[in-house]
Amino acid sequence: MHAKATACANIALVKYWGKRDAALNLPAAPSVSLTLEALTTTAEVTFVSDGADFLAINGEPASAAATARVSRWLDLVRARAGIDHRAHIATTANFPVASGLASSASAFAALAVASARAAGLDLEDGELSALARRGSGSAARSIFGGVVKMDAGERKDGTDAIATQVIDREAARAWGLRMVIAVVGGGATKAIGSTEAMERTRDTSPYYEAFTRAAGADTEAMVAAIHARDLHAVGRIAEASALAMHASAMAARPGILYFQPPTVALIARVRTLREAGISAYFTIDAGPHVKVLTTAADAAEVAAAMAAIDGVSAVMVSEPGGPARILE
Ligand code: PMV
Image (cartoon, rainbow, N blue to C red; front, side):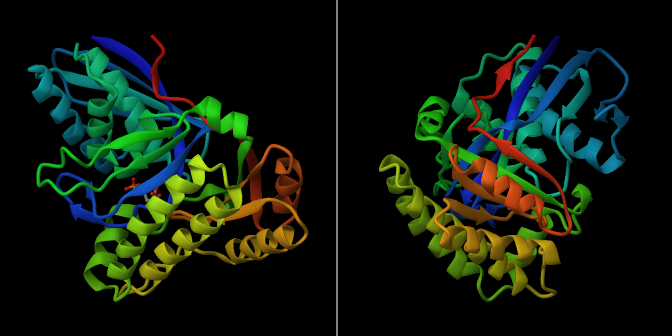
């Protein structure tokens, strides 16, 4: 009753920002993401016959809140497997957690694969993705490699809110996609978590519905641009989706602002790079960091330009990543 799995983080090119069902973690609109090889989480799960659930993150016992969240999620696995064992869980990320670098996506994807195996369940990718989604909406996408689409669906039970692959890792690599991640301010813990921020945006932002409507059209256009290997169209839609997501969050009451001064400086630099003929398109999640979509040919120049911005503490370059998988 033990298994170890690994999963890559993913960064959305069309953002998920808002739930149609908070209990089932169903998105209000579809999204599209790129899975990233350089940002990974491994999860080790051992079911034991007594005691309590125990969670360690990067070698340290997790907070009571984090442990309770994983414990509630594990109840889904236990119910499905017909067991009531407690679990010892250790997750290890190779990048800063809970700071807007998509750590919950890679963590819950790795946890879904490891805990299903440890519980003796033989689940298909779609089922693993639905399980991961219950832990974190974006985690549904990290089960798959390459470029991934998440549908919002319409059914109340969420069985049509599923993630599917658009192109696989090899196709994304052959195209030459790269993502440069500029970490702002040392990767400090984010001010407000994505779930609370999404709920507040939905409940109070006059721009929430506009964002949700745009996400549907953006997803269709994004998938077409991916199939056409049209990086300029992909980048244009990605920037628009990220700014629309942040605009809707900023317009919540009280307003939610993830940007810090280096965030804005990075956006401006991406634009001047582009004017100079470099392929570079920004996106930003629930944190101050800026991720830049670029090509293998331009990645080194983009990374150097990002590293030169005041307040940037680290820069990583990632290739497209593969699917979540069992390690042992
Ligand atoms: O999966 P969550 O609940 O952490 O939400 C992720 C939200 C964003 O990262 C901001 C956007 C996205 O689609 O990943």
